[in-house]
Length: 257
Image 1 (cartoon, rainbow, N blue to C red):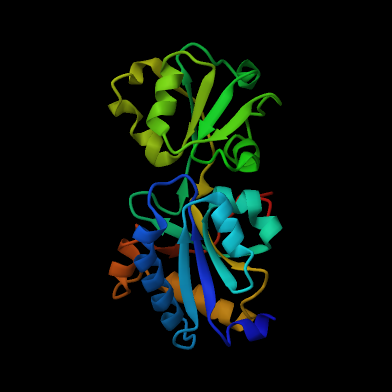
Image 2 (image 1 turned 90 degrees about the vertical axis):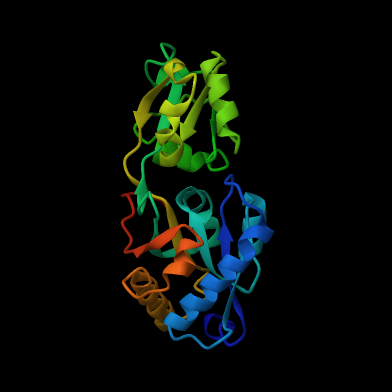
């Protein structure tokens, strides 16, 4: 199957649960990226297309289709679903104003949280809340959450932080960009960062179900690593907030593949 798939048109699935942007808005940019990357890797013209889905379940459904050959997903998605979907990472994304890695920050109301045990009965809200495996064992690997902590997904981070500041039994887990904006909030004095993760990858490009032949996967990997170099397709990358790609630097015991 892996040798026959790319004889037809293969699909690169972009999936970014919890982050703003509709599928229609992103579609032209991901299609251009796929065309540019395939050409740089020396793949046949028209052999790679792309599709964007902003939802977890939509992304999973698309990645299970037989033409899905590659995935471009947040690290949280990879940790949560990489084993199920048989994702083998190729490279890490290097994002503008962020880089290839980020730290996640747990935020609580001032004076309420003294350690993991004090979170018993709390709800944790996060854009990565769809991925409890990532939350518990990657972002909060050094903070073993009580078993009764509820982990919920939200794209409404400001609303979540208002709930934290109001004294509800709620904490928020923020990505690095969200955490950097905390001091600008009018109620920032009511909030406290109580822990921070080790640096973790932001996003990955991965092969799905070994559907890309090894030689073509290597060619794509080398092409992606060169895309951010001088003279590369900077406009194609910038439209996706990308600076380029870097070699894999996954944390130990990162789960998949």
